[in-house]
Image (cartoon, rainbow, N blue to C red; front, side, top):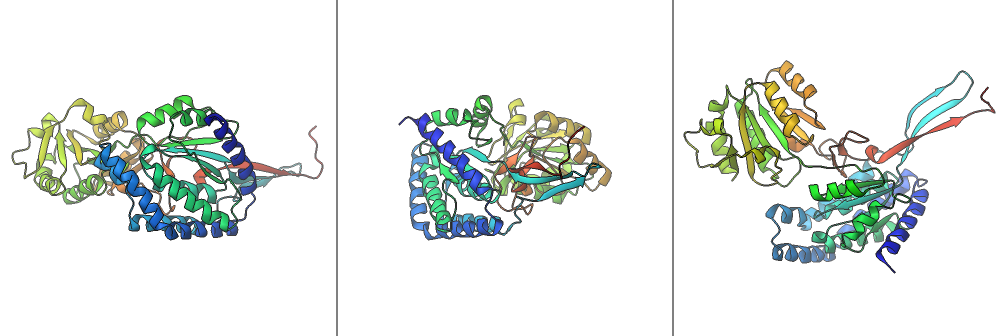
Length: 423
């Protein structure tokens, strides 16, 4: 059989599964999720062996350290993956929630009720934990899922998906709720994007090239998770010690994450006082600073930090590495303008003790998440209390920011009458 025929059959089975899954009560879904988590732990040896094959290939192919970190699994990460599935099981089920209800003068009773989207395609690269997170979130929200991972994590993805399916089916999961595309052939992406008769939504997780390809091909809605070009603005009224902590945490705690900092904007009135605090902290964290000419002119002692001149391209770059671009600005409005021009509408921070200025920043920056005196690294479903997330949307419709269970549902209207007709 051809790849197209195989994928169409997967789509048809997923549509049937979605109709059955929409009727499964929350208690049964939770039991199935717990069984999935148990099977992940039970198959640790097989999953880590599969991941070792992917890591060997990654090293042989010269993948960056950031990508290899995303790809790597060990016992701790696998158990965290299983705990994420358990956490999803513990969360309230959004399906069936009545969003609003009212009665009309003619006696009709109208109810707006949360329902699953249906069949969701997830196309992703590198991170094998997406296999588990996406499966758990989609299942809990009543959606059948077709997963297509990248070649970098193919062995890990197959092992994880097999474990989830085996655990779920043992606990009574309807057949075909979770399917993994068995090939990394790029043609599969094009074919999935054309299957609007089966897929209600596609969510791409990966680099800009993948996302732009999916957007250009898809015949169904797409929720995008574009670049994380995240900023931190150090205001004239900032606590400078706090600013250093937030910059270092935002950049160095996990540089491969999409919510890590890429650019620091520093008010010109505090730049000279900030640098003696910031440069040794960046040096200690092995962060390279790419500084604008005006900031470079203020540096008399690099304090062990690696410093390079910034280029225009640096203001639009998602490094996903221990590199931080920085420049001075003359006002909060100049910082806002820079962020709205060069940012990716992901996560942006202001550090200030001036509350009105902070509120102006929060209202004016057009990003999914805006922070006041807190690290950009908190833009995360787990940190928000959502449990595992399917990603961080930089779209405005229909979901924005960390996407968890409610964002994986739609709604419908239920109208109950007693024979009313329209005159």
